[in-house]
Length: 434
Ligand code: GLY
Ligand code: MN
Ligand code: MN
Image (tube, rainbow, N blue to C red; front, side, top):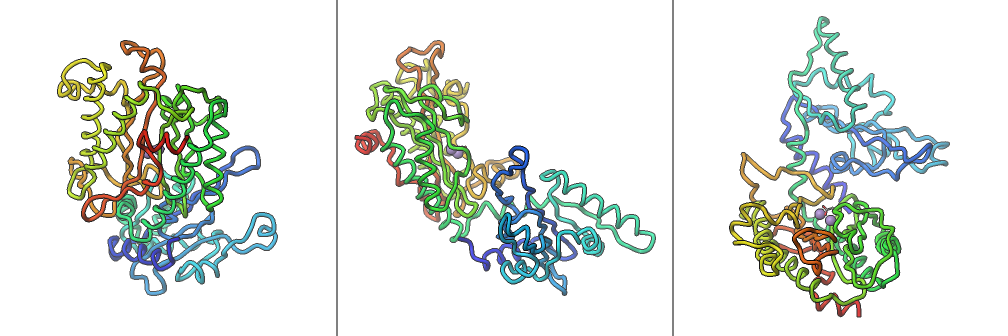
């Protein structure tokens, strides 16, 4: 878990970058209705949680660097014995101060009265428009209210700046404790993937395997970081398949893309293995191409390399492999230039990973691919997808969806694969499933 000290350190760092005469407004995510009066389980907004560690809805954090009466304010729900009997404990304003380190806290119902006054004396407002449209309207109302007071001498802020640039750059570099939490999330996800391999049999259903993943997540106090993908045979070729309702056939591959989330940090792992425990020769040949592509891509995860280097390495190995197997025809260099592989490999080799599974952070800086630096975490996930009926490809390759995905930390002298603990070589997988 992330300590209250670390949350405080993050706020300090952000305020330092914001500079004097500025204010940041960070709203909590609203609750979402699932159906009628049933809500989805509440998941805090990552930006809000990153700065507060506060997991309740109907809250707003305000940072006002240099304000003598207090730099960090929380607006939140009051304690309410009746509501707390029905839906659980609330921190209340006292808890916001005592447990979450706010310098001062106010009931959320008072925000309309208090916030315009806080904005008035500040030149720059850091606020991310567009994430929560309803809250955007409040912010506009507050600013308009100050404008109306301008004749009486009130000063409207000059600049509105999105918080994303500063905050998302901070989030891209993971601290030691963040890495510890991400390692824990990956470890449990690995356990879940191993369990899935061990219980998989022809005749079982995708949802039964999904249940095994959930079992491992929940018993470690974790939950899925995104809906688990459990796709047998053709379903493995559907990149975001989540219905997980088909029966598993002997002779098919099973692709599982599932990650655990712990304290709002994600893991994101994919393994592909034979439903009956043994790869067919064709499956093995394709699988080995993807595995080699992944190894080549992971090798490129080094400080000083560029964001795109792992992708380029993967594409090279995949293309050469497809040529060797006779699935692509032509010269590899030429095929790569023409992106001929995209028929079988239509996504990129990875993304940043952190509090959000597709985490924040720019991939290009000044028009150039970003340089990898220690503390960044990314996924490496090449694949090959050849659904039944793919024209111009021999039948023996059909009905094959393969992806292999690991979570990789950039370290000072290379990389560290956080999701190593689940097998991915042909021999290891077949041994575990035997
Ligand atoms: N699980 C989503 C992804 O791999 O990007
Ligand atoms: Mn991924
Ligand atoms: Mn994934």
